[in-house]
Image (cartoon, rainbow, N blue to C red; front, side):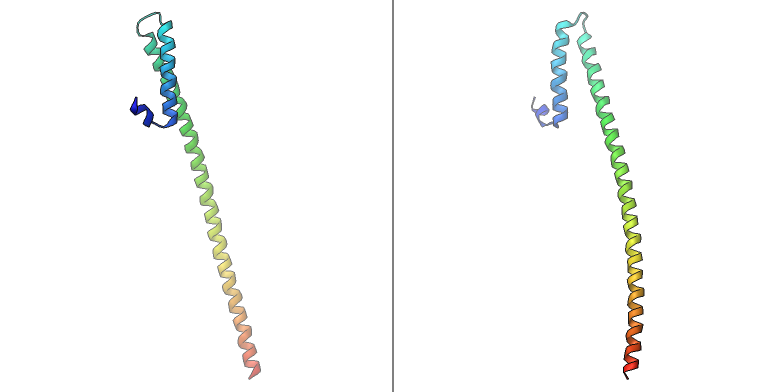
Length: 105
């Protein structure tokens, strides 16, 4: 029982559900082993459900990762463009300043 307490909540719930199901099935079992087969079927269904949830989470994380990559690429392009613009503006202002200094002499 100690091992079950250390499991994540999802697995703990699954174990309790399977134990409750096994108890109900054991009472209703008509042939030996029916309860084990029913319990196994329930466990397989729960595992398949968890696997599908994990696939959905994986797909979501992949799409979010791609979205973040696109945003970062756009931001990098925007940063390079802004930096180039600032450089051009600074060079232009520098030329004006040089012209003002020469005119003042």
